[in-house]
Image (cartoon, rainbow, N blue to C red; front, side, top):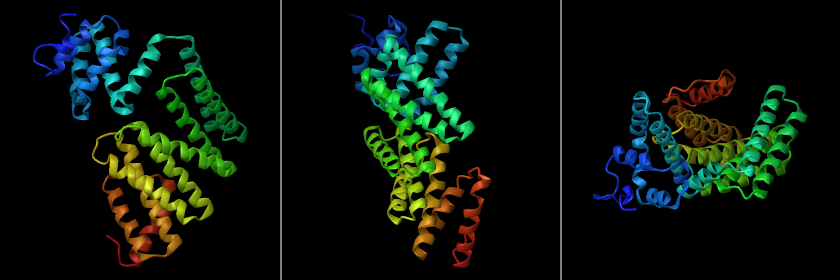
Length: 313
Protein backbone atom coordinates (compact mmCIF):
# COMPACT_ATOMS: atom_id res chain seq x y z
CA UNK A 1 0.00 0.00 0.00
CA UNK A 2 1.89 3.03 -1.24
CA UNK A 3 -0.42 5.78 0.01
CA UNK A 4 -0.67 4.54 3.58
CA UNK A 5 -1.82 7.54 5.70
CA UNK A 6 -0.28 5.96 8.79
CA UNK A 7 3.10 6.33 7.14
CA UNK A 8 2.32 9.56 5.34
CA UNK A 9 5.10 12.07 4.86
CA UNK A 10 5.40 14.34 7.85
CA UNK A 11 5.09 11.62 10.45
CA UNK A 12 2.22 11.26 12.95
CA UNK A 13 -1.16 12.79 12.28
CA UNK A 14 -0.77 16.50 12.86
CA UNK A 15 -4.46 17.33 13.01
CA UNK A 16 -7.98 15.97 13.18
CA UNK A 17 -8.17 16.48 9.42
CA UNK A 18 -5.41 13.89 8.99
CA UNK A 19 -7.42 11.44 11.08
CA UNK A 20 -10.42 12.09 8.84
CA UNK A 21 -8.34 11.30 5.75
CA UNK A 22 -7.41 7.93 7.20
CA UNK A 23 -11.00 7.14 8.15
CA UNK A 24 -12.27 8.18 4.74
CA UNK A 25 -9.99 5.69 2.97
CA UNK A 26 -10.70 2.85 5.38
CA UNK A 27 -12.37 0.18 3.20
CA UNK A 28 -14.85 -0.97 5.80
CA UNK A 29 -15.72 -0.86 9.46
CA UNK A 30 -13.91 -4.16 9.82
CA UNK A 31 -10.64 -2.34 9.11
CA UNK A 32 -10.91 -0.75 12.55
CA UNK A 33 -10.31 -4.12 14.19
CA UNK A 34 -7.19 -4.69 12.09
CA UNK A 35 -3.66 -5.00 13.36
CA UNK A 36 -2.47 -1.96 11.40
CA UNK A 37 -4.82 0.52 13.03
CA UNK A 38 -4.23 -1.01 16.46
CA UNK A 39 -0.50 -0.48 16.02
CA UNK A 40 -1.10 3.07 14.80
CA UNK A 41 -3.14 4.01 17.85
CA UNK A 42 -0.40 2.64 20.10
CA UNK A 43 2.13 4.73 18.20
CA UNK A 44 0.03 7.91 18.52
CA UNK A 45 -1.33 7.87 22.09
CA UNK A 46 -1.57 11.66 22.21
CA UNK A 47 -4.81 11.44 20.22
CA UNK A 48 -6.42 9.75 23.24
CA UNK A 49 -5.81 12.80 25.45
CA UNK A 50 -9.09 14.07 27.01
CA UNK A 51 -8.17 17.64 26.02
CA UNK A 52 -9.03 16.66 22.43
CA UNK A 53 -12.50 15.32 23.26
CA UNK A 54 -14.35 18.50 22.40
CA UNK A 55 -12.38 18.92 19.20
CA UNK A 56 -13.30 15.43 18.02
CA UNK A 57 -16.95 15.98 18.92
CA UNK A 58 -16.99 19.34 17.12
CA UNK A 59 -15.52 17.82 13.97
CA UNK A 60 -18.03 14.97 14.11
CA UNK A 61 -20.88 17.45 14.46
CA UNK A 62 -19.60 19.52 11.54
CA UNK A 63 -19.53 16.41 9.35
CA UNK A 64 -23.09 15.58 10.38
CA UNK A 65 -24.21 19.15 9.68
CA UNK A 66 -22.71 18.86 6.22
CA UNK A 67 -24.85 15.74 5.71
CA UNK A 68 -21.79 13.64 4.93
CA UNK A 69 -23.60 10.53 6.13
CA UNK A 70 -21.00 7.91 5.30
CA UNK A 71 -18.09 9.96 6.64
CA UNK A 72 -20.05 10.83 9.78
CA UNK A 73 -20.79 7.16 10.43
CA UNK A 74 -17.15 6.18 10.01
CA UNK A 75 -15.90 9.06 12.12
CA UNK A 76 -18.48 8.31 14.80
CA UNK A 77 -17.12 4.79 15.07
CA UNK A 78 -13.61 6.20 15.41
CA UNK A 79 -14.64 8.66 18.12
CA UNK A 80 -16.20 5.86 20.18
CA UNK A 81 -13.26 3.53 19.60
CA UNK A 82 -10.88 6.29 20.67
CA UNK A 83 -12.79 6.78 23.93
CA UNK A 84 -12.87 3.04 24.54
CA UNK A 85 -9.09 2.84 24.04
CA UNK A 86 -8.61 5.42 26.75
CA UNK A 87 -11.19 3.93 29.09
CA UNK A 88 -10.27 0.27 28.85
CA UNK A 89 -6.87 0.05 27.18
CA UNK A 90 -6.06 -0.15 23.48
CA UNK A 91 -5.91 -3.92 23.17
CA UNK A 92 -9.09 -4.44 25.20
CA UNK A 93 -10.97 -1.87 23.11
CA UNK A 94 -9.84 -3.33 19.78
CA UNK A 95 -10.57 -6.90 20.85
CA UNK A 96 -14.09 -5.87 21.88
CA UNK A 97 -14.63 -3.92 18.66
CA UNK A 98 -13.57 -6.85 16.50
CA UNK A 99 -15.83 -9.19 18.49
CA UNK A 100 -18.86 -6.93 18.01
CA UNK A 101 -18.11 -6.26 14.34
CA UNK A 102 -17.88 -9.98 13.56
CA UNK A 103 -21.62 -10.35 14.36
CA UNK A 104 -21.21 -13.97 15.45
CA UNK A 105 -23.94 -16.08 17.05
CA UNK A 106 -21.94 -16.04 20.29
CA UNK A 107 -21.86 -12.23 20.36
CA UNK A 108 -25.59 -12.07 19.62
CA UNK A 109 -26.31 -14.58 22.38
CA UNK A 110 -24.29 -12.60 24.93
CA UNK A 111 -26.05 -9.36 24.01
CA UNK A 112 -29.37 -11.13 24.60
CA UNK A 113 -28.20 -12.59 27.92
CA UNK A 114 -26.97 -9.17 29.04
CA UNK A 115 -30.32 -7.60 28.16
CA UNK A 116 -32.15 -10.28 30.15
CA UNK A 117 -29.92 -9.69 33.17
CA UNK A 118 -30.49 -5.93 32.99
CA UNK A 119 -34.24 -6.54 32.86
CA UNK A 120 -33.92 -8.71 35.97
CA UNK A 121 -32.12 -5.80 37.69
CA UNK A 122 -34.96 -3.46 36.70
CA UNK A 123 -37.49 -5.93 38.08
CA UNK A 124 -35.72 -5.92 41.43
CA UNK A 125 -35.51 -2.11 41.44
CA UNK A 126 -39.25 -2.00 40.84
CA UNK A 127 -40.40 -4.70 43.29
CA UNK A 128 -37.62 -4.88 45.89
CA UNK A 129 -38.58 -8.52 46.42
CA UNK A 130 -36.06 -11.11 47.58
CA UNK A 131 -37.07 -13.41 44.73
CA UNK A 132 -36.41 -10.68 42.17
CA UNK A 133 -33.02 -10.02 43.76
CA UNK A 134 -32.10 -13.71 43.62
CA UNK A 135 -33.19 -13.80 39.99
CA UNK A 136 -30.96 -10.81 39.19
CA UNK A 137 -27.96 -12.44 40.87
CA UNK A 138 -28.55 -15.73 39.06
CA UNK A 139 -28.93 -13.85 35.75
CA UNK A 140 -25.51 -12.25 36.13
CA UNK A 141 -24.01 -15.57 37.26
CA UNK A 142 -25.34 -17.07 34.04
CA UNK A 143 -24.07 -14.14 31.97
CA UNK A 144 -20.56 -14.35 33.39
CA UNK A 145 -20.37 -18.10 32.78
CA UNK A 146 -21.71 -17.72 29.23
CA UNK A 147 -19.07 -15.10 28.47
CA UNK A 148 -16.33 -17.38 29.77
CA UNK A 149 -17.67 -20.35 27.81
CA UNK A 150 -17.79 -18.24 24.64
CA UNK A 151 -14.22 -17.04 25.22
CA UNK A 152 -15.54 -13.49 24.90
CA UNK A 153 -13.07 -10.58 24.91
CA UNK A 154 -11.75 -9.40 28.25
CA UNK A 155 -13.86 -6.24 28.14
CA UNK A 156 -17.10 -8.19 27.72
CA UNK A 157 -16.22 -10.51 30.60
CA UNK A 158 -15.19 -7.53 32.73
CA UNK A 159 -18.48 -5.75 32.07
CA UNK A 160 -20.40 -8.83 33.22
CA UNK A 161 -18.17 -9.27 36.27
CA UNK A 162 -18.80 -5.70 37.41
CA UNK A 163 -22.58 -6.05 37.11
CA UNK A 164 -22.45 -9.41 38.88
CA UNK A 165 -20.38 -7.96 41.73
CA UNK A 166 -22.79 -5.05 42.20
CA UNK A 167 -25.70 -7.53 42.31
CA UNK A 168 -23.89 -9.50 45.00
CA UNK A 169 -23.40 -6.32 47.04
CA UNK A 170 -27.15 -5.66 46.78
CA UNK A 171 -27.84 -9.16 48.06
CA UNK A 172 -25.44 -8.61 50.96
CA UNK A 173 -27.44 -5.57 52.05
CA UNK A 174 -30.63 -7.64 52.12
CA UNK A 175 -29.45 -11.10 53.23
CA UNK A 176 -26.15 -10.28 54.98
CA UNK A 177 -24.15 -13.09 53.41
CA UNK A 178 -20.55 -12.21 54.16
CA UNK A 179 -19.25 -14.22 51.20
CA UNK A 180 -21.31 -12.07 48.82
CA UNK A 181 -19.62 -8.89 49.97
CA UNK A 182 -16.13 -10.38 50.21
CA UNK A 183 -16.25 -11.94 46.73
CA UNK A 184 -17.70 -8.79 45.15
CA UNK A 185 -15.11 -6.47 46.68
CA UNK A 186 -12.28 -8.83 45.74
CA UNK A 187 -13.47 -8.89 42.12
CA UNK A 188 -13.92 -5.11 41.93
CA UNK A 189 -10.48 -4.44 43.40
CA UNK A 190 -8.86 -6.88 40.98
CA UNK A 191 -10.56 -5.27 37.97
CA UNK A 192 -9.69 -1.75 39.13
CA UNK A 193 -6.02 -2.75 39.25
CA UNK A 194 -6.14 -3.82 35.57
CA UNK A 195 -7.89 -0.76 34.10
CA UNK A 196 -6.29 2.53 32.98
CA UNK A 197 -6.01 5.14 35.72
CA UNK A 198 -8.69 7.49 34.38
CA UNK A 199 -11.05 4.75 33.18
CA UNK A 200 -14.74 5.27 33.83
CA UNK A 201 -15.10 1.54 34.50
CA UNK A 202 -12.27 1.69 37.05
CA UNK A 203 -14.14 4.53 38.75
CA UNK A 204 -17.25 2.33 38.95
CA UNK A 205 -15.19 -0.49 40.47
CA UNK A 206 -13.57 1.72 43.12
CA UNK A 207 -16.81 3.42 44.15
CA UNK A 208 -18.72 0.16 44.48
CA UNK A 209 -15.87 -1.47 46.39
CA UNK A 210 -16.01 1.51 48.75
CA UNK A 211 -19.77 1.13 49.12
CA UNK A 212 -19.29 -2.57 49.85
CA UNK A 213 -16.83 -1.82 52.65
CA UNK A 214 -19.08 0.95 53.97
CA UNK A 215 -22.03 -1.44 54.16
CA UNK A 216 -19.89 -3.94 56.05
CA UNK A 217 -18.74 -1.23 58.43
CA UNK A 218 -22.31 -0.08 59.11
CA UNK A 219 -23.52 -3.60 59.80
CA UNK A 220 -20.54 -4.77 61.87
CA UNK A 221 -19.44 -1.45 63.42
CA UNK A 222 -16.00 -2.34 62.08
CA UNK A 223 -13.22 0.24 62.13
CA UNK A 224 -11.18 -1.91 59.72
CA UNK A 225 -13.99 -2.03 57.15
CA UNK A 226 -14.54 1.71 57.52
CA UNK A 227 -10.86 2.40 56.89
CA UNK A 228 -11.05 0.29 53.74
CA UNK A 229 -14.08 2.26 52.53
CA UNK A 230 -12.32 5.57 53.21
CA UNK A 231 -9.28 4.33 51.31
CA UNK A 232 -11.36 3.53 48.19
CA UNK A 233 -13.23 6.85 48.21
CA UNK A 234 -10.01 8.80 48.83
CA UNK A 235 -8.42 6.98 45.90
CA UNK A 236 -11.29 8.14 43.68
CA UNK A 237 -10.91 11.73 44.90
CA UNK A 238 -7.14 11.73 44.35
CA UNK A 239 -7.17 9.99 40.96
CA UNK A 240 -10.17 11.64 39.31
CA UNK A 241 -10.42 15.15 40.72
CA UNK A 242 -9.80 17.64 37.93
CA UNK A 243 -9.81 15.06 35.12
CA UNK A 244 -13.17 16.30 33.85
CA UNK A 245 -14.43 12.73 33.73
CA UNK A 246 -17.69 11.49 35.28
CA UNK A 247 -17.87 14.50 37.57
CA UNK A 248 -21.14 13.49 39.24
CA UNK A 249 -19.69 10.21 40.43
CA UNK A 250 -16.49 11.86 41.59
CA UNK A 251 -18.43 14.46 43.60
CA UNK A 252 -20.47 11.59 45.05
CA UNK A 253 -17.22 9.98 46.19
CA UNK A 254 -16.35 13.23 48.03
CA UNK A 255 -19.65 12.90 49.90
CA UNK A 256 -19.15 9.19 50.61
CA UNK A 257 -15.66 9.88 51.96
CA UNK A 258 -17.04 12.58 54.25
CA UNK A 259 -19.78 10.33 55.59
CA UNK A 260 -17.33 7.49 56.28
CA UNK A 261 -14.95 9.82 58.09
CA UNK A 262 -17.84 11.02 60.26
CA UNK A 263 -18.83 7.39 60.97
CA UNK A 264 -15.25 6.76 62.04
CA UNK A 265 -15.44 9.69 64.42
CA UNK A 266 -18.64 8.23 65.87
CA UNK A 267 -16.76 4.97 66.46
CA UNK A 268 -13.57 6.47 67.89
CA UNK A 269 -14.62 9.78 69.44
CA UNK A 270 -11.31 11.18 68.17
CA UNK A 271 -11.28 14.93 67.58
CA UNK A 272 -8.76 14.39 64.79
CA UNK A 273 -11.27 12.13 63.02
CA UNK A 274 -13.89 14.84 63.48
CA UNK A 275 -11.53 17.48 62.13
CA UNK A 276 -10.77 15.32 59.09
CA UNK A 277 -14.49 14.78 58.51
CA UNK A 278 -14.99 18.55 58.67
CA UNK A 279 -12.29 19.16 56.07
CA UNK A 280 -13.84 16.50 53.83
CA UNK A 281 -17.25 18.12 54.28
CA UNK A 282 -15.94 21.51 53.15
CA UNK A 283 -14.23 19.91 50.13
CA UNK A 284 -17.49 18.20 49.17
CA UNK A 285 -19.66 21.32 49.60
CA UNK A 286 -17.26 23.30 47.43
CA UNK A 287 -18.73 21.40 44.48
CA UNK A 288 -22.25 22.56 45.45
CA UNK A 289 -23.61 19.02 45.23
CA UNK A 290 -27.28 18.19 45.04
CA UNK A 291 -28.15 17.03 48.56
CA UNK A 292 -30.38 13.99 48.87
CA UNK A 293 -32.99 14.75 51.57
CA UNK A 294 -32.42 11.25 52.93
CA UNK A 295 -28.83 12.28 53.69
CA UNK A 296 -29.79 15.35 55.69
CA UNK A 297 -29.74 13.75 59.16
CA UNK A 298 -26.09 12.73 59.28
CA UNK A 299 -25.03 16.05 57.76
CA UNK A 300 -26.95 17.93 60.47
CA UNK A 301 -25.30 15.73 63.11
CA UNK A 302 -21.86 16.43 61.64
CA UNK A 303 -22.50 20.17 61.59
CA UNK A 304 -23.63 20.06 65.21
CA UNK A 305 -20.55 18.11 66.28
CA UNK A 306 -18.25 20.51 64.46
CA UNK A 307 -19.96 23.50 66.08
CA UNK A 308 -19.82 21.87 69.49
CA UNK A 309 -16.08 21.44 69.18
CA UNK A 310 -15.50 24.92 67.80
CA UNK A 311 -14.64 23.61 64.36
CA UNK A 312 -17.54 25.07 62.37
CA UNK A 313 -16.37 26.85 59.24
